[in-house]
Image 1 (cartoon, rainbow, N blue to C red):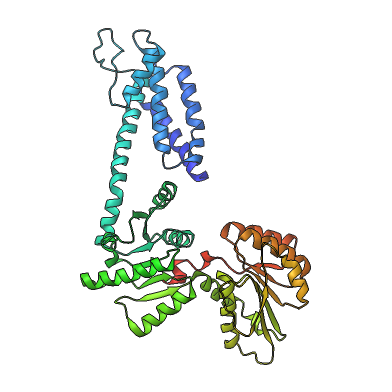
Image 2 (spheres, helix red, strand yellow; image 1 turned 60 degrees about the vertical axis):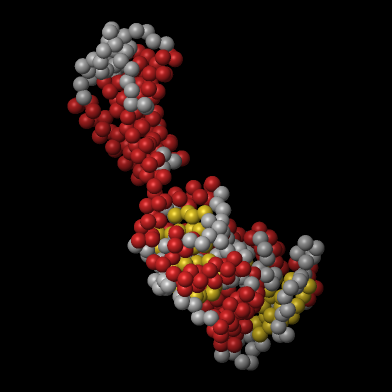
Length: 450
């Protein structure tokens, strides 16, 4: 932004110098209007701080208005009222100049210089607005046509927090992205379009949706629906579309995010034993990937000489995966004599844990985490807090760090709170609080290899 503002002042200064030496001054450019224009040109960068997209429109509109109103009000032949001056000024935006500078109303050979500035800036504003409006109305169709013809784009079905991070990373890598969902809020649609993302609002049952988004020549397709059933439904529809149209897809892989382990197991079994799709399918779970990434970067936890006892607070999305990947990492490790224990605190409404995992009932709304842990009178070497909300994780982590000052406490955070986490970790808890990682780490083009 600093560079843009400096460039603005350089361009304005050069324009004013050229204008001063090349344009013949007349009585319309009096001292008052010069001061007004100088003040306007000087303070205009304030607009740049709020909008870059419409900055040129604002600049041309206001400049034409100032020059036009002052010129019509002070330099017309007759003493026109403020109302007339305003009306004459707005006519400029319709590419119509009121001839009020001669006695008979005929067009003069030369208009006052101030009115020349006003009419050309008004005309520039109107013409540029028309062309931009035309382009924006056709931009989506043009982009879709390019995707259907050339391909090499990424199609993401369903917009939510998870898919947003992948979209953001793909856009940062200058990739062409198409997002398909049944409904977008106006704010979401505007945000995605500003990121140069092609937005398609369509039903899951839309027959031609794969043809519309150019699935045949896509670089990758991803299903990120909140409900696993919707993703599975689309997967089957894509296979039907491929067989019906006899299409050979060019994408490297199709990513399907499955959160429920039951659906994941069934889909894996289906792919291995029943049906082989006509395109490569990769099943992912962002929380599983976060857990894998964590244990890949923290193998020393399971390689220590002493016994390891993990405490997992919360056995929902991330907690389950942390436990599962910890057991896999442990079996791959070379340690034999050291004991490896896992204790899980949760209400356990749906989950059946393995026999080697100790269960401790814990209700977040009723029980005190500090009291429950102290009542166990056990030594935990590492604590993982995997509750539903970042704020709760943070508060519980701070409280536990005061009791277990030498025990590493790992929490899952979003990108916005990670900086705050480490600030607290370095100032109040002597670095006993750490992050397990965030889903943004695994929702990237490079990590997913697409």
